[in-house]
Length: 249
Image (cartoon, rainbow, N blue to C red):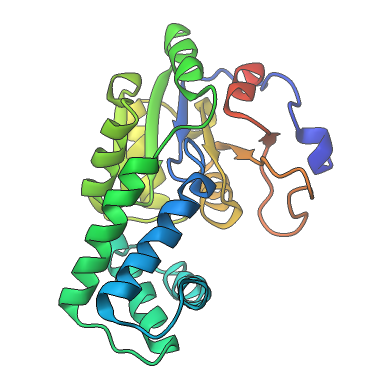
């Protein structure tokens, strides 16, 4: 079936007892934090007296983050604070600066403050979660994120009461697409893999991992300029917005 044919493709054929969600990129959009990221880079560069402007810093950070992602993705487990630290160090090296541990800590403090200020959920998230709970489903978060960041953002979004289980990769000792984090999430949900939907925005981490673990994968694809890639891991369903989940049940 084509990607277009899978969009809002009707009710799933299995009994569903749980809906598990990725967090970043799924329940909130990283694009909403773009201004905070640029402001953080500008403040950081100014405080350190870096010659590079915010545009150069942004390009360096983007390239360094992509390189770190390629390095870390095959690992079954890592702390995201290490991943992000390596990305920032890589940014520094691209502009000819070796950043100290103290400078890294300052970067995280600047970024944390501005991201918290601009954080917001995607449209319809809370209403959809409430409806899913009203239908008696177990709702869980399964996120590649460290414990402190997960709980900070859950509270910023006032989501704690919406979920039955919250599982970070740090708590699981496993990062998607590794199978252990999915197995622990299913154990908490008390259901078999085929009784759970997994909703995420990443083909290599969310869809590939869920598929291998036997969950029914749902890709959140909100781009209008192109369809999801036809190569690599393929989801069972594609949705455009979070409320579209309700049409799969």
